Image (cartoon, rainbow, N blue to C red; front, side, top):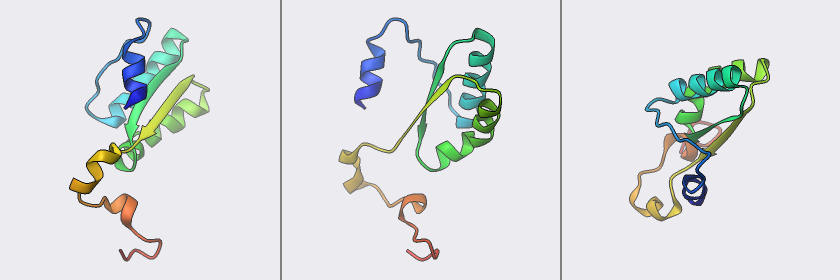
Length: 95
């Protein structure tokens, strides 16, 4: 992802790996509130974003300065992947 590569080259950006989106979104909200600085998440589209929505709702209510980047797998990996039920389901529930 070009954005991640570009941010890695910026000394002022400190990446912190989180293994669950709910923890990541809660942590960036806490950091933004305490430090008074913007914080950023990089979440996966679908379940990843959904797992963090409650924390992001709370952050929105108190105006925490958060940038959320929500992405999907790189397009080069699509031919080898099974379709995601989140992105392949029709509005009626049938695929």
